[in-house]
Length: 377
Image (cartoon, helix red, strand yellow):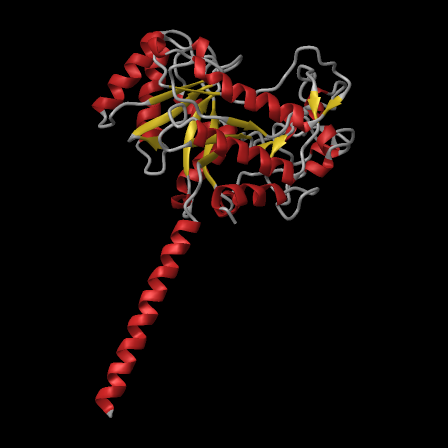
């Protein structure tokens, strides 16, 4: 009798283990991400506001970061992140990593700035730039194994890399400081780096970048041009930072989110004219009135004015990202092998492109929309 009972137990144990294995297999299939979706990360929410001068009239700026404005404190206070405006602590970076990873954001592309403008490299200034602090925190975060990161080189006015020597210095710095980090984003083993203004690169500098990376043990570098870039100039991928229609639009009307979405999808579809793989970008929003305001209420003397677009609902955003995944399905030769995609942006709050939970979205509905598309749940 005891022998029979042991046999019965073994049979039931075997059935249980088979069922468990099958269940785990289903679970593994369910959580397989549909694409490798990242988000641009703007670190203007650290450092010190230039308006934080102790005066009564600027009391709104006390303790605020560099890119905070009076308009964000008043008319657009609904954009306030649930943790407040500062993002310069390790605790908060680790919180953001968990939020992103839990909801299907696989990597951050951090804005990176050259110092000194149009001059040789100033490593100390680069390391001390408050806009690089969140990236440095990410690199040291105890939970950064859950995500990856890469650079978006913001080589625009005020941070221009000019001349072959400067581009060589930049290449050496990127390789030594970032590319060797175990969580740096790679595709086919190659570090991925994005260039905001591809027309501003030095062709010889990008050639040097490839040579130096190979000497450092990498198979090369995938250089992505935002809005352009040719293979003969040293680019291997194309992408964008954000894209939006402008022609025929006025500066007073708030245009529908659908117009912004349809425009972005048209940009993806236009990439068949390029022989380079493409990383599609979902411009989540564009309304930078908090920065455009004058009279000390905006950013500096007020940033350039452009047409504004309404922020879509979480459902509309979800459908937008589904169109991105569908585009990758329909254009496998144009997408990267690992199906890289991007969202503009994680926290370009002043410009109107953000997905972090905020006062108007404390439960993170836009993040949950990403999760449903990426993980299917």
